[in-house]
Amino acid sequence: MIAGDDPLGWDTTAAADAYRDRDMRLAEKLIFPAVLRRLGRSPGPDRLVLDVGCGTGAITARLAGAGEWTVQALDPSADMLDIARADRPHPRVSYRLFDGRTLPWLADDSVDGAVCGLVYCTDPDDDRLAALTAEIHRVLRPGTPYLLADLNPAATGVGFSTLRHGEPGALYTDGDTVPTRLRLRDGTTMTSATHYRSLDRYRSFLTEAGFPAPTVDLPTLPVDGPAQDAPAETRTAPYMILTTRA
Picture: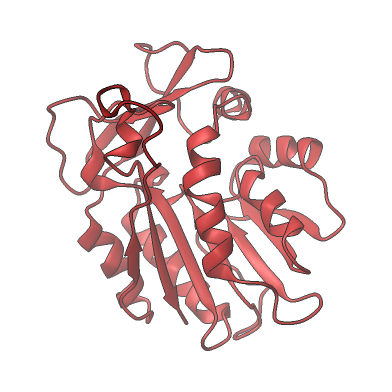
């Protein structure tokens, strides 16, 4: 979708097709290595990790390739899952459609880790996210990690190499819909609708579900070349990574 058009909803076929072709360079450098490092290696063969809101399976593929994790990759979009199954099949991955709120097929204390990347910002419904966070807490074994990676709410309006979350100069409050422009691999852009939440709101989702207060990482890229020519992601973190444990 070309920038300036109406934002695409995340649960549409058009969004899934466009998201398949997004430019993932910043996420690959700033989110994926940090999430894998904080998750750690599987503590034993066939230990189960959830990729909650897996989309087209980009993080799923990294999880499956790291150690001996078995991955359940979950998403409420059938179109996203169709792409994930086609593009990123793996013998230790099962892709599953779910309602975005409940995990009824999983028993209490039965999961060894969970990852949720760029999901909370796409859902306008606080009650659904609160229910989902509580379900993740329910199914995780005590002491196991939950990694929540999302857009940095302190970086709205900043033009990064592959995305811009919000309009320059605009101020957003919890619940506001924010146009987010994503660069595609062919150099065009798509505009999607995301939803602003402050860091305190993210913390409250976790603590109200029973998790301890998370640690917060704001990764940036190193400067490579003259400082005046350095992209915004060397000065400001496009993403944040929250780490907590059940």
